[in-house]
Length: 113
Length: 111
Image (tube, rainbow over all chains, first blue to last red):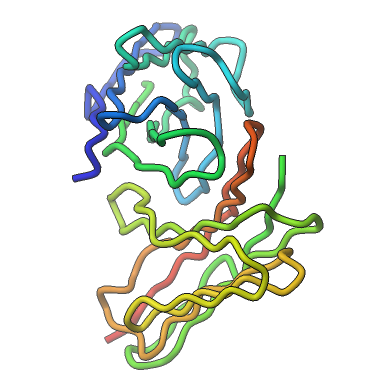
């Protein structure tokens, strides 16, 4: 158990819909990262927050947005969903920035039909 | 961000054989981290290398950081079926940026 929690575990929705994925970091971790992993693919970095502020952006679509709240939990919002958005979405947390190891949550599997 | 290329993409071995995956960068890396993702699981942090030429061991796993800090390797001696999974390297940095994972090496171990 990494200490990072993600909800829901599975999500099935239709094209055009909007969903919100939630992540609670490990106690004491200030950074939250979001990754997308498609079938047999690597980890595509989406976005990073540190103590409530956006710190780095990766290959995140404009239809996607995220935020980190004062209690440090984070939400990833995916809108106007397309079939190609079906993937495993991981949240990871770390104490600080890039020099620190990341602890991953169990992921949310999103299926868009 | 500090891009890293990882090879090979796939590796099939017989149980008992050795396995090595490589992580290469065109730029000097601040540090390198290695993660393992079991099938159906999430990536799990294995180790971090920081110093030039650093070598660290964890049981049958040996991690190396190149002298120029541009490449790294993970070597598994005498693989076991429990070693199956995807091994990722990640270029860490001292500041925030587009922190990147390598594409991963998918290891299959045949009993």
